Image 1 (cartoon, rainbow, N blue to C red):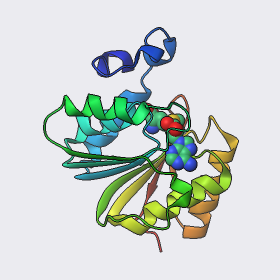
Image 2 (image 1 turned 90 degrees about the vertical axis):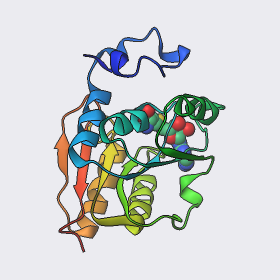
Image 3 (image 1 turned 60 degrees about the horizontal axis):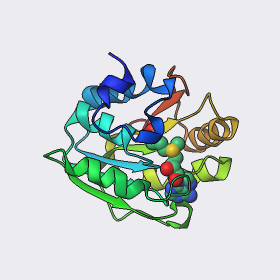
Image 4 (image 1 turned 135 degrees about the vertical axis):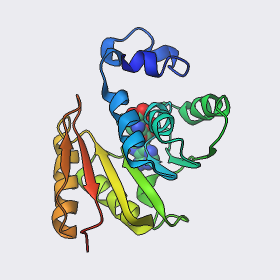
Length: 185
Ligand SMILES: C[S@@+](CC[C@H](N)C(=O)[O-])C[C@H]1O[C@@H](n2cnc3c(N)ncnc32)[C@H](O)[C@@H]1O
């Protein structure tokens, strides 16, 4: 199975022709959702909803919260919300907000946070700090693009060092960190 098959009913026409959906990046999100079974998921950087949808497919989470200021695609959140309305089950809240302006999230006991919005060193550190502030005991942070983007890797590594945790690299096409919290400070 490919990402395109997994996401077939939500792929935006902008992505319909490209070959980047012929891999298994989103299948990896599906399996991580299935493995960790988060009940509450927060995502920074939703775009058209692919990773959040794949995580939900695997986990059947009850609450999905996404933050995206539509920096890349005006209207992308409306599109994602429309797609999420087609699925029954989770409560979905998509917020049109700049992650860098957030001081804290109005959520607690979040099981999984996916960091994938502002790809600068400080941006990633800030999103990881926001994540840390709302995680449940044993919750995890995923950071995408750690091999695809040097700034993201530096930010994620700096955060892990500050926090005293060791990330696990999942070798997807763009590189995904799993940052555990159980042993964090
Ligand atoms: C790499 S895409 C996310 C892809 C998505 N996670 C997926 O895999 O389907 C990054 C998204 O982050 C959003 N973004 C960039 N900077 C942001 C910021 N400072 N605050 C909120 N969203 C931001 C962009 O608009 C874009 O939709």
